[in-house]
Image 1 (cartoon, rainbow, N blue to C red):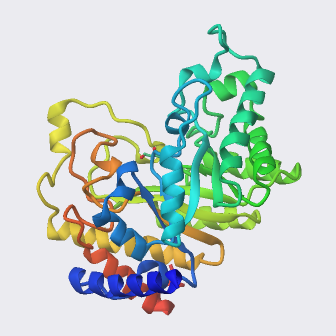
Image 2 (cartoon, helix red, strand yellow):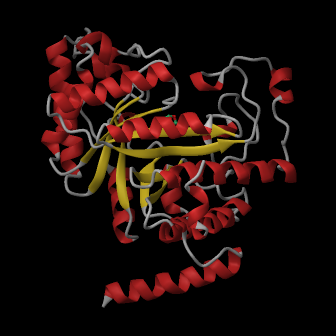
Length: 378
Ligand code: GLA
């Protein structure tokens, strides 16, 4: 009975939402249901904000935590877990029929320094750190066993030139920390999908290292189900042909591809965009690089819409290999791109504007999927 009441309430909300927002009544997740799942990243406060959740529950069928599932949030003190928010997040998803992707288990950021130290403040040895990681993964992944779709097991392990990124994981354990993390995650939840996630994967050397990683894992029969291509993009980056090839090459390895963390910046990027590095520039220059402090120009909005349309053409071409496209946030009011790579700018990378109204891009994506035959030729 409760189920039917929920379905009816959702249906009414859907109609009201469509009327209020002026969008087509077709939610994105339904429009793309034959192609891939449509996900969104949520900030911790988002799940308690009904203006956001009303939209999220209609448009998306996968949710990812922007910050809430990172180690710093679940393990704030040595040996003391805090699952208050993560439990709430899983309850939220369950109530609203979404699946959760866990982001992320092993990363060089959002991890307390003490994780790598013993009680006396001495740096852990390889075996000690491996044991600590295994216990952590058992506790964390084990807690949500059977409830997640999958985990971003390792995030951003390679540099632009394809070398291993320096981190305490690499320094203390060695290059096989990645394999170990996948093994531990599989032991903790044998049914969860396991992913490697990174940015800049169109860059040939970085791409080659991730290809080699996937092959290595497969050769050792360690499960890896998909590669997450972080889509922190712009009006000009990446080159669409390069993206097309990148997706195809990963798919040829027999893993799924996910476009994770999608956002399309409309702002000028200082320095080479493919390296994804933080910018260090002075205030005057930063202002020059902030052309739309109040409002996006119509011309830029059109370029933005066109760019999303072009990106989705590529994604749709590969819809047999792509399992999910996840937007890194819902609204321009809250996006890390307002502060990266330069702090304090006004960017416009997402589908909903600062007033939580859908931008023209939403309609454009729905029209694209209706015109199915237009996307197969690049
Ligand atoms: C990376 C991480 C994400 C997030 C973004 C910035 O892409 O994978 O978790 O921190 O940076 O928001």
